[in-house]
Image 1 (spheres, rainbow over the protein chains, first blue to last red):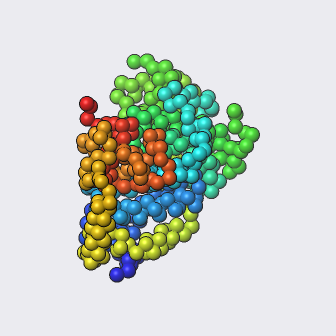
Image 2: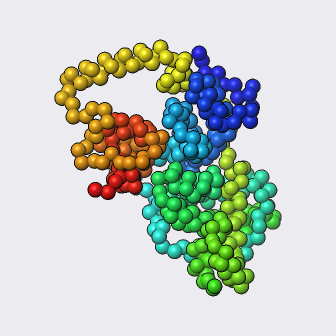
Image 3: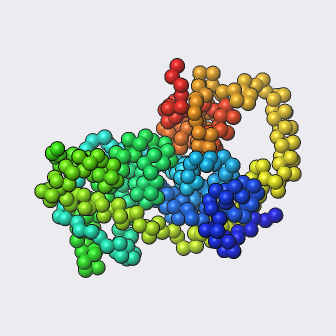
Length: 220
Length: 185
């Protein structure tokens, strides 16, 4: 029997997640897309954060979803399904990156010393940025560019914790690192992003609509 | 309690996540009231968390969902799902084939590895490894790893499987990335 996707006929909220998982395990494979649909954007974003390439990220996101389907019987209810799915995605994306860059040195930012203290730059006060700012494509693009500038180990932690909203413990488990490392890297990632974005977000972005975070305007 | 700028910067993440004790929280807030730099760091970092935490930052390419659904359909999901009621016959055929393959393999090979026997005599099977944890194994390797482990030397014939599967195939936990599951000698 071909796998028919019935997500449109049956809204996701009609079933709770545990029921969906049980039904997929019991053979209603067509419900699988409904199960992962709330998380598909998270899966893609996670893959993109690691690979920084749209085509690879989409391919890896699809592979991760297929792998989750194949291994759905091994999912244990004590974990959150979303965390399990993200963990598979992280593994798949890292594998792809390893394969693609087997003979290439990691960027120098990936070898930054995470133990040393980080001294945030002294910018002027940064008042609260209204969330409407995100309606503007160029603001989202600048945020994405700043994120891409982080070293891999910082970007992975930041994306899982602050964008996917995983807990410290879940982030540690997904990345195979200690909770202490998650906290250290998260602190560094947040401060580096603040330093990268403060000149633009604290200045003209939300005032005049004209971006000041352009090449040559950074104070370093 | 008095804190320095360096201490504020070290605790800014924990402070914003609400994970500092009340005394330290008060000390940080008192310090920030008189320190323009630390106020800017706290405000800026809070903004970073709010902006990136917004759903709108999770953009996917146009048509992503549709292509994902198509990929699922084209994979003929039913065939990939072991144990399903619907493909019982298919699995009977596969199981029969596996018996034949394994049987002939055992005949021509003086085997040192059967079932759960470890691939390495020195390795320890470990305890408490979550069976559903996804791990990486190399075809000719003896250990299973977390993806990204620097002890993965073989780069070309890697597979991602569950820890339970890896154990069944005789792989043992990596001494580096999965050290916490290894019982001390």
